[in-house]
Image 1: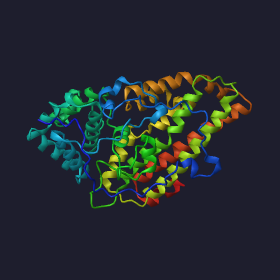
Image 2 (image 1 turned 90 degrees about the horizontal axis):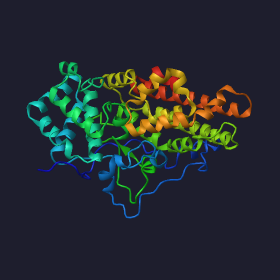
Image 3 (image 1 turned 180 degrees about the vertical axis):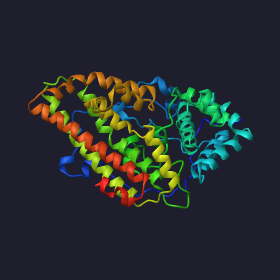
Image 4 (image 1 turned 90 degrees about the vertical axis):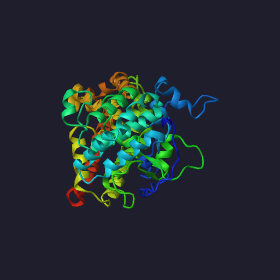
Length: 407
């Protein structure tokens, strides 16, 4: 029987989001937002003779280097699963489009009674790493649609709230990807997009997400309707991560630098320009998002995820690790709470940045022009976070209530 460990390039009928400009935000926001390439770490290339399937088999064995593609997946997300796993595709779409939470739960229970969830659970061990991540995204969509995003699938109490067969499948997928708390923004956004058309040539993953029209793989709005605000929010986060690749590279540049190193203030100025560019991009995303439809159920989904701390973009966590804003703002426990939704190798990289950028953060307690540049970088990050919060608020509510916040 086909196990669904490969992908199929099926044509999508999704209504595309408005086409994004084909240049990075640094080139769209004027001279002050220009992001130079100097100072970025060396970009790693695939080994000679590598084949497209290598990423599926090597998976976690490869050393993660965010300078290459940030926290985006190494390859575009799986657009359509095949074999028995088409059942999970269909269930995720049904749950996302259900009129209410009870309808989504009923769909999961029907799948359980039909034996579909058991059949899928028996095939989890055969999934390649890439397809396991694709399955995890669909599990995350179902869990959120059913109101189960805050559950621990292995906790006995969860069985009083959720379908047991689905919890078993959820636990098996979590074990397969070695990540227990994946039901959050990284899975819902960074693994839920595809280019509207297949590019004519190979593009690095961050360039693909920046320059191509993107459509969601699992939509929260019906196929024959425009993308809703929740769909646009998830695509906006994907583009934010793609443009934020320069921030990851600059973080590596600042790691281990002494505060009195002559190159430190130069790198911090570049960081300020990157953050200004990202903020300008978010303002554009907010303006476009306000034109999209929104339903009460979609607003509830966004509000629930925000209340659980599950809408934190990885690129902002990377900036926090460099500048220390997150640790000062919420304490070490709060910082780790936000990071729990990231895979282990991403959390490890952020922890390394916490340590290696500690010398640069001592500028916060000094005076002089270098310290002033450091504080400017902190202030620009705070402004970027406020703009992202305005985007979340705009996605969750009607346009008039959040127009002032977006400005």
